[in-house]
Image 1 (tube, rainbow, N blue to C red):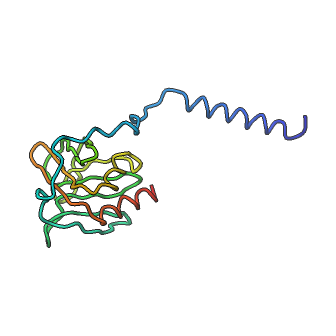
Image 2 (image 1 turned 135 degrees about the vertical axis):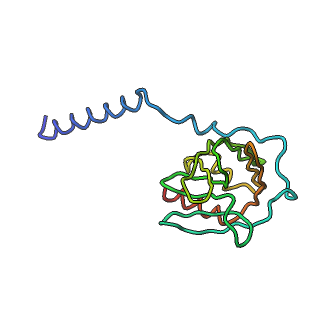
Length: 169
């Protein structure tokens, strides 16, 4: 054998170690290809859409889009941080929300956003199949919590946030 032989052996051992590590026990999120639930029977209609509009902003280098009445605080936000698409809604307490589209729905656990305003937040990885559905949907977006239901229009502002998250995340 030549002088490269020890290096090749080390590379082979490192490759095998990586393969075995990939096969070992690990705490992984559930299979993202099956994570989206079927669409609910009561899909949102255009007549139910909340009054307000989407707007796009960046804060501390992170893009976000908020929905709310003119000259008011956002009642719902879609943001991108560290490869995660964050969903925030105005609420005093956490819990669970269901985001429903005509193509499917997703349950998201919400916790306090730790902001001055009463906001809760939850997140999905940017590569989650439901994020792709939100990006591509043309149907209104129904956000359902224990105490409230909001129907939001689709818009380029939140799509810009999701696209940035997919590109940079």
